[in-house]
Image 1 (cartoon, rainbow, N blue to C red):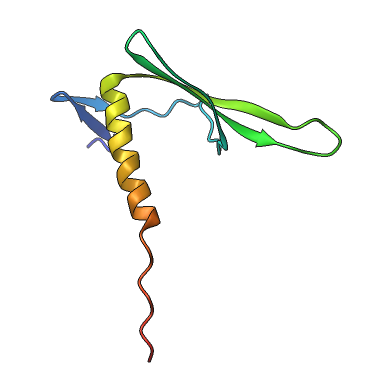
Image 2: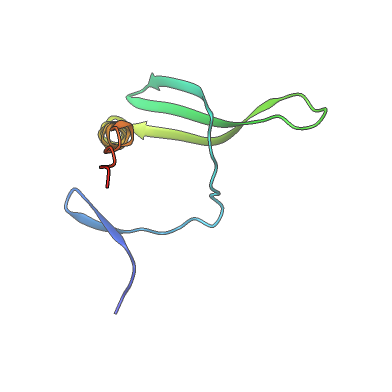
Length: 94
């Protein structure tokens, strides 16, 4: 029995595989956002300011998305942002 997670793309099941080189980052800044050759190019950076060193915006992710993937990401982000910005329900008094 396999416990591998999959994702269906255009009717084909793809195994989801973690890349051990990819690390988690918390980007604060978009450093690149452009389109070229029908690809959306996005670079994200996390800001670092420590001690006496000059502040840096360290690139932590570069994405090159085809337009289909970019539209899918936009749809997902729109839903997540809308959900996050909904006001919380007011608590009813006892």
